[in-house]
Length: 124
Image (cartoon, rainbow, N blue to C red; front, side, top):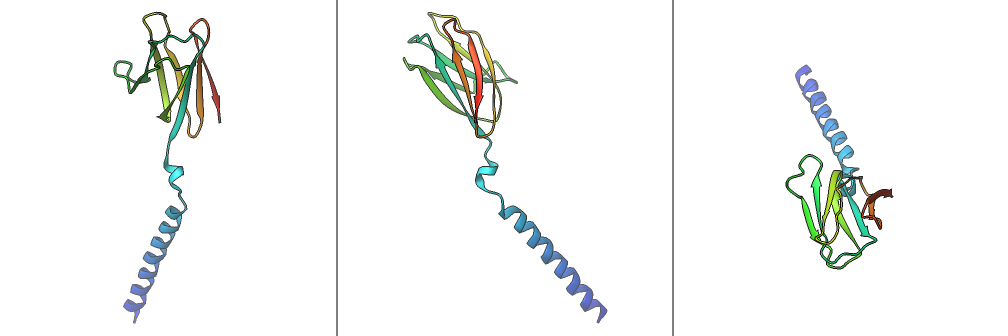
């Protein structure tokens, strides 16, 4: 009799554990697991040949994203949460590198002013 009761109690404990485990993880939404944000880059002085290179702050030798502006004034790039460096290249103007941070579900704005200096601001 004792063995049967012990078996039933341990089986109930295991079932309760799995029930608790499944309740905890069923509450997570897919959006909670995504770690994305955006960067919006704009230029006051529009140059036709601007190429944007985005680097991880840990590796400035290999860009993780590269795009040509093609006469656009602004562009929005989706990125994972983290710290990055933006290096614009142009044959007709000099741009310095600009560090920025991507936060979950937020947009980081980088505006290059008339002196080609990148100004970073954040928005929800």
